[in-house]
Length: 577
Image 1 (cartoon, helix red, strand yellow):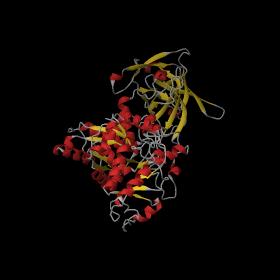
Image 2: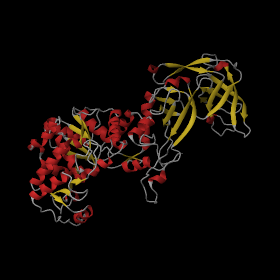
Image 3: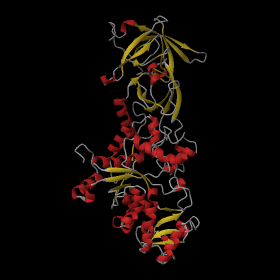
Image 4: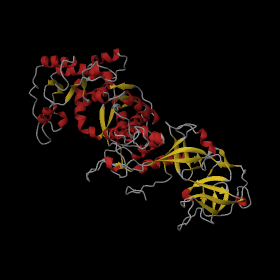
């Protein structure tokens, strides 16, 4: 049961009312039913969090069910990826099911609909069906095959099942109302012929159920109480209800015999479909078709490219699962479609990593700095906290020598107003080490600055009398003699405009790809990061949050991805300031 700290929404209110009235025996059973035709994306995470969250908060159950009714588009790779994504998000399903588990009972249910005079075999082509369907303002026309006898329909459908007819030559259609205002009720297709090998059932079935039919009855078979769908299914709800009511599984337990024989739990019920607004973010696309095109066209490096909005992608990017859950919790559940700023998600990531990521120093655009007043063999170990806000993270020892790397942007030969870092003749504090003065600037033959020669004020080192002397700027550094060389991948948003799908200017989402969405540099890191595990997250001080890449990172070849910068670098107009 929910408590006062649980965010409320209209779906939770419905479930609360159902429990209070004793509907469904007070039980709550939900399901997350993805089609395994691609990788899940951030929009799917909203549905995952909702379905599994409702089940958790009301002491119910949630099934993971694969809607595998379209064999030409589905792949076991996608099944495994979906399983991994749900687990990564922090949820565990009650049972894993497939729509294909129910093919036999769905077929028997279709025979019953035919026997009851509620379905018929139609020979119209797909184009003819569209012509007969009518429009929003004109009623449709009955198929010339609508009045076939029950006997003829049973014979033809069984022959469809036996594979006697060509793909697309016949369909089984519900007999509802060709004049219905809701076009979905104008004798919709329940089955089509498709001779394709299925990932679960092989070549056992030359016919496959349509989504609306299979989805409704799968919910009923599993005893789902609350079938939570996105808004595009609102117009399909009357058909959903028609399928559930006219097959009437609770009154016909014999339809479940094949399931019992297969060892599957059978809990027929009458689910209620409830629709909510899907999750939309700016600066991205979340159409599976478009995401598939990005992969197949080689515009990204696969489904788990860290720039992709797939759950595999954001996981590899380094977004914590807790941040994704928090984001959708804050976004809320409503009936109103809206687009949420990507920056809101990034702030959830920052909040999570600020609390959980240990600090380290790293340099990703290195400039050499030599402390000339220290002996060449000088070596020291400095003490640093692992987290400035949490002593429980402990402390670490950091090597310090006369040869250091600093960020190139922390030096300016001709400083602009307000620049408080290192300049010729100026002083700055080296984080945790003391105050230095820049004495000399070394350039190469092209005029590029390649080295700074500086003096360390040894009276300003930690514990010394002058340790508290004030200077305006503090910069970080890495010890050049012990530094760990690493590949650092600087990721940014994949698209450079807030609405990549806007084609009003004649451009496609391809035209809005951000050419600077990935930059690869050689970085120098604290030596202690040599033992960083894949997927471990860190704050590189002053640079942002980074994660050891879950695929490419190795102890002898470290690879770190920038998860997110320390603060938002995109303004509301959709460009960097």
